[in-house]
Length: 182
Image (cartoon, rainbow, N blue to C red; front, side, top):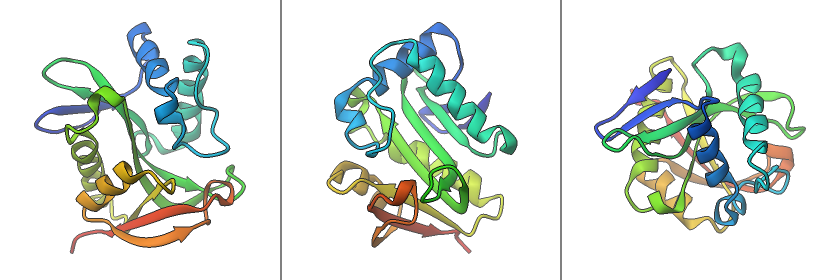
């Protein structure tokens, strides 16, 4: 299912088709991606079969919300190549099980896609979609040292509010916020 389209991108559900699972594995098996996904993450993937488990976990976690929240594939419309993931979802609390009322935007792109503005473009479209539902504030949480993701948050117009440890098991993360435009 298509979530949103932009001039260059199609944001859609990740599927269990072999090409999607292979690409999901390719992205999340890379150390340069996994290093920023948190101490408690299950990444990097080490076996292609793990992509099936990851996809099922993502779908389970957000099933109750329909298509409002999720982790979605970012596909370049011109080529059909999936370049990464963009997400809009409730942030997990300190226990990582109970979801909070705080909404997160995030992105994970394949290194070959870095520097093309895809993260900013996909995230902006997803944030606009979420703001249209009435959400007053969207957060981005970034691992300290991940200057590229911090730059994306700033390009999105998000304001840095310092390090917070409210979510993801209490991990200290650089936090950015953007209020719904009035």
